[in-house]
Length: 379
Ligand code: GLY
Image 1: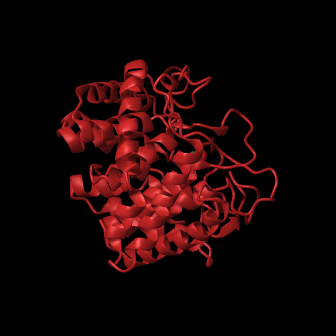
Image 2: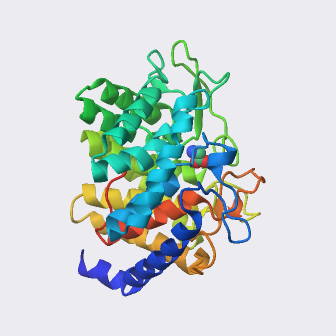
């Protein structure tokens, strides 16, 4: 770590890590192997394992637990993570409700377990999920389809964060087909979703027969052509990860371009992103989850670029994390969730607007552990 970075961090990193340990220690006692999403009045009441076993965020809690276990070696984190992983078998076995987000669900649970403990049962679960993801590949359009029902030609930027499951499966099985699918999807994302200025669409609707571009809806952002900040974060971190797994320089250049766009925008709002970088000035609506995810992507980028380039990405990541902490983190150990003011989508008014959301906490913890050099790569 550079002298400049050490001085930017000061005592903040160690103090924040101590608070994270205290908070997570209390939280795992309360939550155990239930599957949390959004707290109500400071408590995780809903258990997604009961209400929606297929919900796309169901891996983030075990992901937090495995990061905590890896960093602290405290058994209670492992026990709770293993419990969630077993519960997710109902989704693998049910199959019908599965979707493109199987990466988010099983990279953070079964694959993380396998990486840390070598569990063969967990490896099988991970490979099962990878085959589900690969099975969604459209060989004419060269993309992994999003969602289910009548959306055969839909692809979304979020899926850049799911394809690391395929890179992992290729290595485990010594079968390059998984990489071919992942790279085809990344290449189609580069072509159809990343714009020349470094901003990104959320959704591209393609003709599923031949891959022709039909429509670019606004998705979870303000409108078509706007710039949903979490989508930008998925693309930034997703391309940085595809570069890490493949060494393909085009992915590194894409991640850098998206990062430059993200940094320029987030700097205008005190390093906490608006939910959409191209929305009307009012109402002001933040999405902290986009910031902390992008910070992880920037820290990943900082590892991939030359020494002279590192400070740009590392400093921006730290600015985002410190601003998020200062403005929106809750360190009360008697309440659940750390990072407040996350927002699911610009037009959503269904309980995911300006609230703590489980993936915000996951990325905040991953970023802290990256800075402390105590994280393991879950992606
Ligand atoms: N992957 C869905 C979302 O970011 O809300």
